Amino acid sequence: MTITYPVSQPWLEGRELDYVTQTVSDGWLSSQGPFVARFEQAFADYNGIAHGVACSSGTTALTLALRALGIGPGDEVIVPEFTMIASAWAVTYTGATPVFVDCGDDLNIDVTLIEERITSRTKAIMPVHIYGRRCDMDAIMALAHDYNLRVVEDSAEAHGVRPVADIACFSLFGNKIITSGEGGICLTADPRLAGQLKHLRGMAFDPGHTFLHKKLGYNFRMTSMQAAVALAQTERIGEILALRRAIEKRYDDALAGIDGITLMPARDVLWMYDLRAQRREQLREFLAAAGIETRLFFKPMSRQPGYLDPNWPSLNASRFSEDGFYLPTYTGLTEADQAFITGKVREFFAAA
Image (cartoon, rainbow, N blue to C red):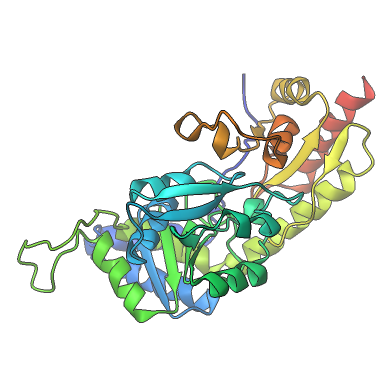
């Protein structure tokens, strides 16, 4: 089956090719190339944060953040029930235990349920800005203050949402708002944490590069070629976000009032256009036959095989995962593309 409208694709309309060509011409392909530092500074400046530390993925960014904060075996980290599993895996990679909290009607972690999950072993909270919706960070930061906890923002889907946590982690995977194909970046205002992040991502080498390693480190480095693409994307992030806001509005306008479709709350930035639908699987099959790719909502963490809780209650996260999905969402999506996609949605429900 031919896919004409993929669920996502990168928008490479800036200086990506120029910068990558420069890295090849200069021979600086590795993580030591100058584009890494240029991207780190540009992305940090855009977000108004002092320090950026680029790495190999959003998942490694989260892992580095937790390790830099000293989180490890015996510790607990509050994680949303409704998220991509990498959020929970990053906690597990450190030897700590993720403790899950259900979502509210905006799909973000329900801040009113966090406090009851805090124990003497809790060391951090990891809010996730789901599909570009900002969590209630004021309430989360207040809880963190009251219980002396650290906060790691999972901003994988929320480029453009300004971070406030100890460390904010962004993904640069190919389907993200800005991309380097694979890659990630941590942002922090704390110079000590920034130094620790850099130390851990680069195999914990000492300054003299003596090959004596005093702690467990990682090869989580970003290459200069990836950073070249990421820098070009960062240079146009304002334009990218504006184009995506227009895409969100066109979807809202075209899909409002369709019997069988439930629109979701507005997003602070648009990563994916998420919605709920009656007869979701039949609708997805109908759209796929027209060349329109869709993707399901996340599954609750406590239903994942690695975290299965046989006593899990009826959750908001479960309810949303049963009928939620998202439509093609990428910066280059045109008005004509959207008119075709939403027309097919209307056609499906009109025939019911």
